[in-house]
Length: 173
Image (tube, rainbow, N blue to C red; front, side):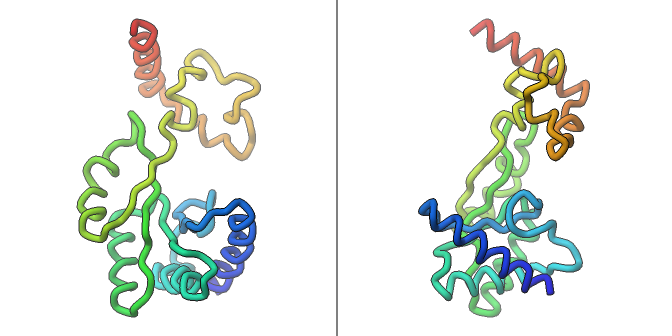
């Protein structure tokens, strides 16, 4: 059932991607993209099989992961190798002053071993590093939207103190 939902959702998404001229589909561990969080109901084997099927049908040229744990990416490559399927071509993950470990420590060996491409996102940590939240959440910011309320959870006192210091440093430059 999970694989059917994944395939159906992917085909719908592919139609809109093609209108924009894109050729990469991202399987995410976050509901922001295509695949809901990898949980019991959707095994990595199902994701690899579904994405590989989309590639073999010519619906997409490549597929990638987003915010997958390194062991999940390794498992996906193992499944693809074992069954002659298409492995992910890239990983998309956050990379910013607060989230550096995955890009700097965890992924380089996988990129080298598998030829995995890497694309990073959220360089300003959802806008937090821009300094616009230093004093309060602006009324017109996305952090005020109900579906983006989780951004407020990222604004811990420790992080906000760091951002204020970064802001002062940037102003001196």
